[in-house]
Length: 298
Length: 317
Image (cartoon, rainbow over all chains, first blue to last red):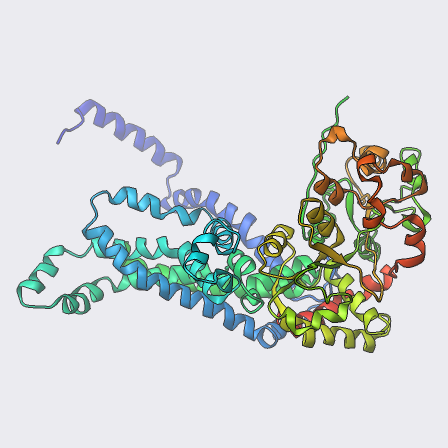
């Protein structure tokens, strides 16, 4: 270890003392440091959100409204759009379960077995470039006259059956959020000492016992955080059901919101749907951060 | 002097209206100088409590507006730049030869082999008007329009594979044989036919076809009102109505761009390569006035919200 010479240390002290004079109070210093973030949050997050909430309490299809407040939009959201809420939560849940089922073994292999894991991690983040690309890609693959059409035909598979299906939507949603699951579980697994697995094996534990009694409990926080993160992202899913879904999947909240607001000019109802979606996403993000502590070592 | 034109395109033209209202409501100038969208949106804009469209016609800067047939003039706010745009059914003649009128969309042979536009847009609005007409109902009588929408919900919706406004998706599905018919605009049929998809046709409904042409209008407070008028005049010029060879367009895209003859003085501009077949694809000016149905767009703008809301609710969208 090297140390700074005494003269330099004295200079640091003097500079530090001047700085302390300018922002003598630690409270003031804290406020100054926080101020830019607070201003940005107020300007670009709080004010638009407040306006969105105000619009969600109004009726009729005009921006030129005179504020006559009503809770009707929220009543409609929880009655007429109940099935849309169910569909949204269903798709987000099942795709997150798919992520977990395939993501856990992948994360384990990535952490324990793969030599060039940085390369694999980089490859794995490709889906994050955009759900739209993914959905379009899958759409063209599933077309009978698409690039894999002849192959599917040769294998006797009527691939068009899977176009505009729940399966296609779930698959593309799961692929999009797969990296979140792997990253969270991977972070949790990397904190588990491989010696513990070895000790379990030495004591006669079978692989499944090692998994259920050692690995799984120790990576639990990563599983929960990964699941919630995937679930949260998928709550706002738009492109995949729009491009690959049947009318049933196209009923998800984000598409309803787009249609109500931008196609049918019902801004109040669209805003109420948006507030609901945001409240759900906020709750999930909060839970995700809360549970990710163990996994991410924060 | 060179003028740069920024062209913004969307398959959900209603977004332009929302952007305009947002700008005006927040005290900002409109982001677009000219709106070139279906005429129902002009009616929607004019129905607002505050004016959102400039009164600019007739204008010395837009002499071409006077060449446009009276039925396409909406002076002083706007002028039509299309003559035969019609929302309807584009289908494969071989796979669905039975499609001759709106009611045929309820045919069980179409189960899972039809796409329709997203409820709310003028595309589906035009179709609802067509369905009402096909059932002998009057769209201006609320109960009768409800009956027409119920027909859609109960008889046509079960056949729908997907709701989409994306014509590239529709093209792929039709070409791939995944669907037999798509709900869109007549221009798609022309483009597909001239691109070599000779089985693709537009269903000209026996009960009649509604027009929903594009109109140009200038938003209130636009930063470039003069340039806007120069653009409107150019869009109505010979060149922009009947693109010359120098534009390098293939027949398919050419026929997608050209939307018919908007006035007598344009009739002589039909290109030689298309002269023989042109009127198989487009109506003559006489046919336009005699055979095509026009819509009371003020009534439409006033009631379309209720119709779409009822339809959306019925089909769970």
